[in-house]
Length: 222
Image (tube, rainbow, N blue to C red; front, side, top):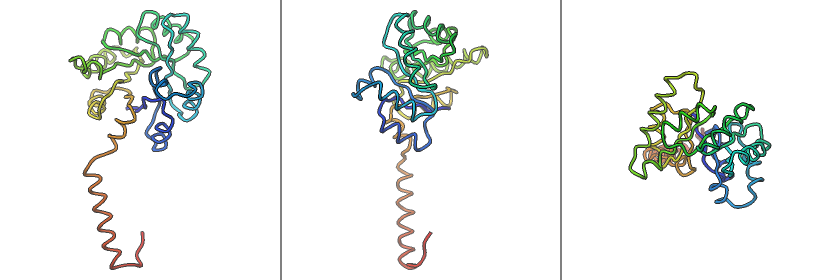
């Protein structure tokens, strides 16, 4: 399963990319506005740091505007994936981009029907928002199961399931069990995945034992 970071924060991107953890990046207008600065500079730098796919989102809601913006976004790098909303105009743009060889991420997916239609329109990725479904009392992970089953039933669909709106590490494990292709994580969730209290305790014990050993063997080194 691929791991994308859901952020426009360059420091976080560099940190986790240096660990070898990132296969790609997803962004959106909210994340861009949160970071401030010049979005053009940020997007250009992200596409240079990351070798994998970088989803950059249009802000237009009409087909013509999406097409114009999407083509401009592609100028930031060969690894750009144009992100469009799950709307009639978004699907129309998805189809047009796909015919032009431009990969598309259809976002704001909340049903298996929507995922199916996006796949039919040629999307490279569908982004179901599981956390937001959980927030309203629905089972977000059940949606991932349904989409996975549908896509498995029809091998002609090459669309990848990109699980979004992840709130905690358990979401990641559940998505991996189901067989999602990608998860996109806020930096805080990826940070939590690195941690376990027993790891910290174990390391402290190892170091303490080594210090005791060195006290009686001052000339020993690793």
